[in-house]
Length: 382
Ligand SMILES: Cc1ncc(COP(=O)(O)O)c(C=O)c1O
Image (cartoon, rainbow, N blue to C red):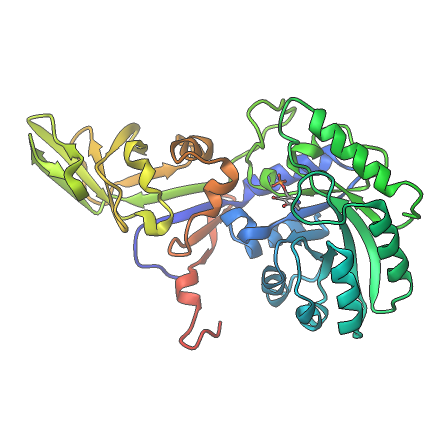
């Protein structure tokens, strides 16, 4: 698939295989649900799913029904759990695409039982143990929900789960409290043949409580660590890089103001200024005006405001137009990028827009390019 600007995200699928192989080896007694919501954190859900299946992953989780449908339409056949809330009126579509859903309240379950009498939908009950977002909160609600499920032929109670709020922190007090609440909620339930899960990436690295048999891992798949402080006994490899090429190079005399609002003024008698065709409409955040890129073996400072479609860089010497620019990659980590834009590595990779084509590499070769902007046809039909 083609694209017509020299700016793209490169996704190294060998690194994805490397990461998932190590994660699976470390958590080998658990069913691993690969969390590929938000387009696999910006990396492209379909290609990551295909790669993970090859590596032996058997279950996926996404945030929304739409994300589940997207995978089904791409012929991903294995179980897909929708982690987020689902509208009762969407249960027919959930059933059509054979998605597994989360049930987060007793009230919702009662409404769904009245509204839906179709083909069996598998459900996982979500327990709120301290995240405060979604989930049943009391043992009474949970017991009633399970009883209702036993009496309803159209939902199959397949699993039960909760979500951790602080698993990446070194102080485990809150984490232990959540485990304790989860265990109390599970107390007395018949959980034979049910999936029981609470751990995310950081949680999966801790000794698992004896009652869980599955984990939900997202961030680490693409090589990011949930926290710098967590010790790792295996290497995670960043799968995302961001590249562009200098589209224009200028020799600018001293005292010239560059880009919007002229916040940068050239200092040297002559400065070599390169224009990079990427801007905040691509997700290259305006806060990167003090960032750096890597060009021809050297770090170079970004100067002036980041524009919607362009940014400027001070070059060490006159470089030819068309010179490759690394904005994220071997020399500039996602963590560095995230720090510059005052966020974490979770958000950092999600915010790249679909104006950036995703170029997938395997064994050093490009095996696929996805340019979402050219996938949509007029009328919105793919
Ligand atoms: C409910 C739920 N489970 C699992 C995950 C995966 O977490 P992580 O990316 O830390 O592995 C997330 C991510 O935000 C989530 O919201």
